[in-house]
Each structure stands twice: as C-alpha cells, then as structure tokens.
Image (cartoon, rainbow, N blue to C red; front, side, top):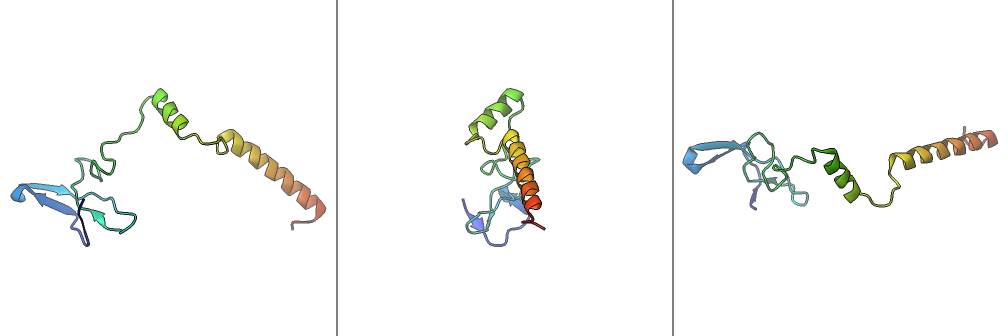
Length: 100
C-alpha cells in the first residue's frame, strides 16, 4: 500500500474517466494518508473497513460481545458494584475527617 505526503481529497483514475474520493484512513506509525480510493458512499477503502457493516441481529451482537469478553471487570454490574463501594468508602472517609 503506497502512501503519499500531501494527498488530494479526490483521486482521478482510468485516464481521467473516474473521479472518486480518497480513503481517509491514516497510518498510526507514519501518519500518512492511505492512497486507495474510498468505497462508494463510504469514507474509507475496503482494506480499512469500508465493507464492514457490523452485526445486525441480536444473536450477532451477543456473539461479538462474548468474543470481546476478558474478565468481567467492565460489565455494567461490576461498574455499579464498584461505584457503590466507592460511595461507601467516601462516606467513611468523610466521617473520619480524612477528606474535605
């Protein structure tokens, strides 16, 4: 994949017959913009996720959620429990005069 320093916002291909937008994706290492054309109606090329539409059904969404599950420390229930414990800790600290 070739990348250029100061890209134009559009690409002219096929000897000037096709005009399309340039992919907006940038390299995280070099910060250069991709030189491929963006897909029709998208801002990025197929290589950078232009074909992806994400899961549509609830089953697909659950499958993605299960695939990204690591240890359960960031579930809504875990966050609510942690928030409750910090509130109790702050009350105890205030009662002892440790926090203003």
